[in-house]
Amino acid sequence: MAQVVTYEEFGATGDGVTDDLDAICAAHEHANARGLRVRSHPQATYHLGRRALTVKIATDTDWNTSRFTIDDTDVEDHKASIFEVCSLLDAESVPIDRLRRDQAQVPVRPRRDCYVAVRNDRVRRYIRRGLNQNRGVPQRDCFVLRQNGSVEGAIDWNYETITEIIVRPVDATTLFLRGGVFTTVANSMKQETGYNYWARNIRITRSNTEVAGLTHYVVGETAVGHPYRGFLDIAQCADITLRDCFVSGHKTYMTIGSAGKPVSMGTYDLHANEVVNLRLVGCRMNHILDRTRWGVMATNFCKNILLEECVLSRMDSHMGVSGSYIIRRSTLGHAGLNAIGRGTLLVENSTLYGRALVSLRGDYGSTWEGEVAIRNSRWIPACGEPCQPYLIAAVNDGMHDFGYPCYLPSSVSIDRLFVDDRNHIDGYEGMYLFSDPDGDPARDTELPPPPERPHALAPCRVVTLGRLTTASGKRARLSPNEQMRKHTRIIEEGNAKSSDC
Image (tube, rainbow, N blue to C red):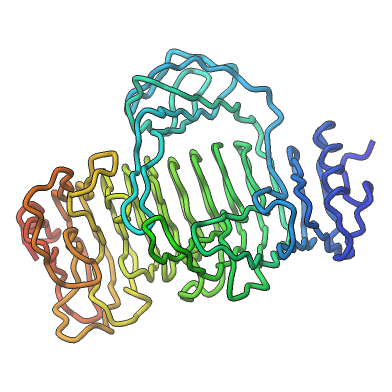
């Protein structure tokens, strides 16, 4: 019996015109049933057709230099994925009825390590503010439950009640998905109000998976279109690595948001929801300073994210990341680094071009409960255009209930940071370490604070400054916000001197 399955054995032509999706699906069904590897023809171009047919991938697959065409101008179901990388392990039952924040051990011993996601539908979190306002989402967490009952992935909330639990065993071996050059002919869907996200993608739900050397291009974008959830869309799994992949930015389109006003539609090439231990290594894209393209990546509810040696237009955590959030030896473009969550946020040996070096998303309360560290890095505010730079941008006047208390980082440490602020606004007096949470981070003004703040933003306690240099030669200032200047202490290392900048 052959140890490698090919698409041609099941009728694929690879001529770039004939719909090969049926043959590809049959090849993977055969390989999955027998535990065999799959390899495509290096010179083939496979057309993936318009049908709502999802290919299940459960064994190592080598797409090498093969090309795949995804024509989204006419499809049966735009919400259907084309490929899903999935596990064949039988489900397990894990009887957990309550959890507490940061719980490290549970009295359950699964037969295998398991990915676990829990919900409490009676509590709402992430109650969004602004043009995309909403009523929030049910409280949720994800973590890895080891065979010895230990928990990996810090639990964020207390659960007196668990209304839903999802348990997925973690495969002991890594599944490798290698190569492949994919081209999406973009949709031109018209819809004036709201979002209508497209899939037509590769969805990954199998823990312990590595995607290496995959390339994705987008062509055929017109004056109208609707957003994509992510060509690589990772959901409810653990230990995922994207290595040496090439991705593409998408054109930005407009719609009418939930507040009845025009908003930009976020469309992604990389997307992750409820993932524990997500690593991007050596992933790249072109034109990272092109503002006509939406930021390339977004995540929600993830634990432990690492970007290493990547060049991307944006890294964004919408509805929270906890544990570690690390940007190392990477370059982030015009849409920058966005964060909501708790734990340790580290930027190291990296170059960033965002308007802020770290933008704490105001639509989710600008909360980061933990530490921020910036080391040996370079920041070019607003891609070098004249602006008033704010190292950490935050907007939260304390008047909205986001479903949780909100915090500025308890501590910020900066060592060996160069800020290229040579292009600046008239009357420029130097960068700020923090924006004014009560006002607009794009303006150097302080608005009158509300008389009462039922959901006040907890202040940063200490900023430790090592070597921070600016192209303008001007000294960094703390914030235009008076209350922050009262509550935040600055320690300048080297001379051990306290200062308010």
